[in-house]
Length: 83
Image (cartoon, rainbow, N blue to C red; front, side, top):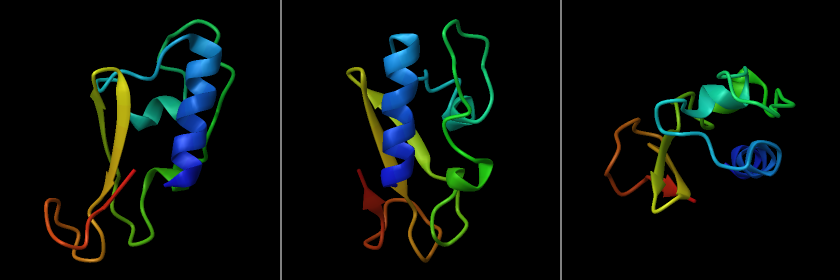
């Protein structure tokens, strides 16, 4: 998750904002059509957690929120990890 967080900060530094939820984390791998994109900021393999599940990315009041579904692969359960 730390790598994704660092990549999000680099994206924001270059483009002026975090990726929209519609752009998603894929915008860290390939340019979603924004100016000043100097990526890739992350390898495609970094889009999944340690168990191979995709991270959930949300923007809450302009602040990025990442969530890993954890070992069971289900969101909103006790093994979830957030950042």
